[in-house]
Structures are given as C-alpha cells and as structure tokens.
Length: 319
Ligand SMILES: [Zn+2]
Image (cartoon, rainbow, N blue to C red; front, side, top):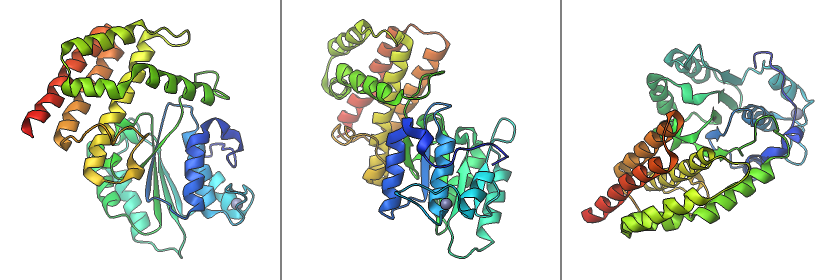
C-alpha cells in the first residue's frame, strides 16, 4: 500500500466501533458483501479499517473476529505486496478509466485458487464519469469472491448508481485534532440533533403541510444552540441527514434490500418515485454547495424546503 505505515488489527480504531462491529458481524456470519462503501470525514480511519478487514478475510489465524497481524497473509497485506489485494488511488486529480480497466484485466484474466480478491478504491468520489461507469459494470456482475471497498468522504459524492450496488458503512465524525475517544460524543450529538430536529415530522410537513409548518421548523432549528457546533455545522449535519433520508427512499425503491438502508427511519416515510428522489437529492446538493460558498443558513434551508415541498406534493398529485 505504497509503503504507507498501517496499524495491524483494529485495536487502534476503537473510535469507529460501529463500522467495525458491522464488518465483524458480516465476517462471523459468513455474509461478505461484494462491495462496501466506507464513508466519512478524512482522518477517520477508513483506510486502516479497510486494510484490517482485508487482513481478516485472508488471515490464517483470526482471533475473535480480529486479524492476527503476524501470519504471512496479514504481513503481506500490511506491506502492500499481497498478489490478491489491489489498492487504487487517484492518479493526479481523478481516478481514471484506465485504472479501472487495468484492475479488470488483472482480476478477470488471472485466476487464483479460491482466494478472495480485494480491491480498495481510495477517494472513490474522484472517479471520473467514465471510470464510474466502467466500475458500475463490474459491480453489476461482480466476479466471484471479489470484494470491493470504496472509500469516500461523503456518500452523496458518489453516483447513486454506484451507491446502490454497495453496502454502506458509515464512519463516525471525529473532530479534527482530537480523533480519539470522540466517537461516543459525536454519535450522542447526532442522536440529540435528530431528536431535537424531528426530521420525520419535517418530512410529513413537506408532504401535507402548508408553509407555516415549514417556517416554524426552520425557526425552531435556528434557535438551537450548542456550544461546540456552529450554525453552519449544524445546517451541514441537517442537510446530510436529509440526504440520507432521500437516498434511503431511492435505494429502497430500486433494490428493496434492507442492508443497503442506513438507520431505521427511512422505510416509514412514504414511497417516492426514483426520479423524484433524484430531484430532491439534486436540490439538497445545491443547498450543500450554497452553504459552503456563502449563504445565510436559514434562508438556504427555507429555499430548499420550499423546493422539497413542491417535489413531495407534486408527487402526491400523480397518485
Ligand atoms: Zn493473520
């Protein structure tokens, strides 16, 4: 892995308990997905986790769901010279179609004996459109015992077609500079935020409500004060949660597979035509960019909600 130093095992990745227990459970049950999408902020341990998970798949002496770190397989993986493991990183500013083609050649035309083959794609959000299309074809008809692990900073930076072929594995947000022991705190914050902002109620208001309910909601959100979180960060988190809701509804429509759904509130929010979900996601995306470049938080949210309301209520008229 380009000579980069990696920690062996998962002992040093305690802060990503949720992601790791999901992977361990899949391994213990013998249900390895053919593609995973690890997503979360930079520096959260996605790559180390991918390496450790790969070691687990190959390890000769796994102990309690952990790779041993010392068998030849574990060592070759850590050193980056295992013949069945390939790491793809951006070539310059993007991951190019030639890189995806090269992996196809390497893994399709050579056969190994019954081993897993693992392809880790770092910064998968930098796939060019052509490269993404090419990868999609592979993911649609995955070769046997091949596991793709895509790493990306945010779920929504990848085309939904690719997302819908991967099992999502969320990595907790860790504060910069303090990246250990923060998991509990950030999870607690997200839970608190979700409870406080009542997103399912917001969706119901988008579906049935008038403008009054929406403005009351943004006013309520605008009044929330948390010492460690700026208004902008709070809005960003909310937009991300909205994104997850529409993403879930879309993926549910497309696949009807619960393992691709994040969290538990997605399936009760009413069905939406996939095209309508895509429109909603595009609008949320615009709001994310607006937030990044200027934007009065509250106005930005209000504009978005008015658009989503139109999208949701237009959908109702079709039925
Ligand atoms: Zn081992």
